[in-house]
Every structure is written in C-alpha cells, then in structure tokens.
Image (cartoon, rainbow, N blue to C red; front, side, top):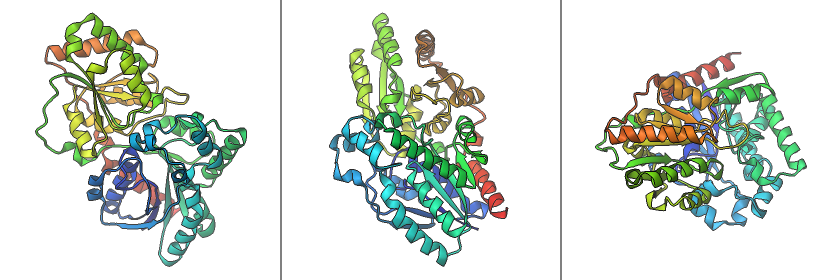
Length: 419
C-alpha cells in the first residue's frame, strides 16, 4: 500500500509546520503503508534546522523546483526575523493576498501536476495526501484526483478562509470570494478532510461531511535523557513562533505590576523568548519596563528547544487573539506536556486547548481579558517557585505520541482505500 504525500515544509525547514508529516512519514511503514513524499527542491524557508535532516526516514522523496514570486520583492527584515512578522500589512501584504490566491505557491501547481501525473502513471499509488498551508498543495492534489481518480485526503494544519492572520492581507471582495470558492472546491472533492482540533472539525463540517481529527503530538526525542537543570530564575518561557496576534499585552502589564509591587519578584523574573518573535511583543515588553528581565534566544534547533522546555520554570502558551481561535492548538503544546513543567496559557477558556490542559492536568488558561485571574495565577506560581515546590504532574499524554497518532492515520488510509 503506497501513498503520495504532497507537502511544502520538509527538512531542512525548521519550525512547527515540518513536524507533522515528518513524523507521520517516519511511522507509516510500521503500519504497512509506504509513503512517497513530494516537496519543493529549492524552497526559501524562513527558518532552517539542519538537525532535522538526520530525522528523515528511508523513504522516496521527490523534488521539483518551485518559483516563489516573493523573491522578486525581497523583505530583508522578514527574512531575518522569520514568519513572526510576515503579516505586517502594507503594500506587499496586499499584493500577496490579492494577487497570489490562495498563496504565492500557486505557481508550483501546474508543473507539479504535470510531473506527478507522469510519476503516478509509472508507479503504483493507492492514495494522495496534501497538507496545507500553503493551501496550493491541496490544489495540486485536487487536480491529480480529477486526472487519476485516486482517493485523496486533504490535511488542514490550519484553516483556509478563517486563518488568523488573513485579515492583515486586506483582501478585496474578489479575493475573498475566490478563496471561498477554492476552499469549498477542495472540501467537497476531497474524500476525507483531516484537521488538528475538534473545533476546526466542527467548522469544516458546516461545509462538508467527511472530517476526521488527528492532533499534533510529540515524539521520542522529548524523552532523551540530558543533564539540564531547572533555571535558577523564575523563567516564563515561550518557545516557538510568536506572531503579533499572540502578543500577550495583558501578561506584560501584569508582570510589570507585580514587579513594581515586589522587588524580589522583579529580581527573580526572566522572560525567555525563543524562536521568531514579532516586533510588537518586544515593544510591549519595553513599554512595560521589563526589558531588563527579557532574554531573547533567537531561533534554535528542535532538540535545543526541547532542552529549553525542560529547563524552564513556567512554559508560556499563547493562542492568537482573533476570531475563531477556539480551535487553535499550537504544535508546541504537546511537547510542553512532556516537559513536566507548569503551562501558563492565555486564550479562550472554552476552547480545545483548555480541554486538553484540564484532561492532562498540565496547567492553567486565562482569557485574553481576565487580568485579575492571570495575576492570581502568576502570584501562586511564584509562591511555589519561592518555596521550591513548583512542579506539575501531567498525565494521559501517551495518546499524543506520534506513533499512536500515526496508527489512527493508517486506519483512516486503509479504510478509505478499501472502500
């Protein structure tokens, strides 16, 4: 049984987008499924993690050149800081949203369809899987399904028309309608729509019938023994992408208030930000006179990020403060669970994240506006830190191991092929 997986993000790409299908591909052969992966040959990824090249399993990887029109309008600042500042608004964002629909990878669709149609005709492929964003990957798969009549799973790591930063592209009515029509076409023609949270499933069920959920997860590297020890500071650590939509203004205000009221807290506090961080977060931190407590680590490898998680006193998890945020489950959540450090989350208290935190006893969540509750939580955490009893005992997390998640995927694939 052989499946063709179409994905844009693949090592040496860094960041969370690459992890989902790198891990699925790693474990699928254990369930009797042979993956063939199709990726761009010359992609200009915003972040690079060379260590991930060592994790690529022994599978067939097809590569074809991709043209990225964004290279014509280079933005050195965004290239330097990564995707945290990708939706800054302005002329280039407007061009990207209104002329490259659904995304700048649209120019890869036609040559990819031509190449893969020939490959499929010469090789036995039982099923096609596309993963987006970028959602142009789904357009490739949809055209291949029409030409070959092979079953197809469309995997949505994020939504399409309700993507949290889509508003920053200032879409015209024409662009909005075209995106909606393309999304509907994909949802209607895919044999199964796969997504990452129950709330996103409910959103897609309003537009199609066959929707399945497989969350993101963690893998064995999180259990590697190391000699890391807990930070001596009261470190509140955010690890991963921090876009402007997730900038927790309420948190910086609360930390500033406590620091002014308690000099020991101010001396102990360390705000540790690792990865691509938006300019807005840095500005907010400085505005609240917390720059002396700020530690910027920049982008680090996946393995280094896991070590930092284990060392941190508190793990900060931020959900974008936008419409339709209840279904957002950032990939870092599942690795956070294994670090056995208290999670301090800011986001919808009735969303998917809140449910998982409660089921796993791994932390607390505060809404975007509940300043009093957030302050109470931080003071309690700091009191436990000062008393040297700050810990957490997360449980029920094995369901999120990548191998167990891949087993669910394998069952979906086999059932679909046998229909």
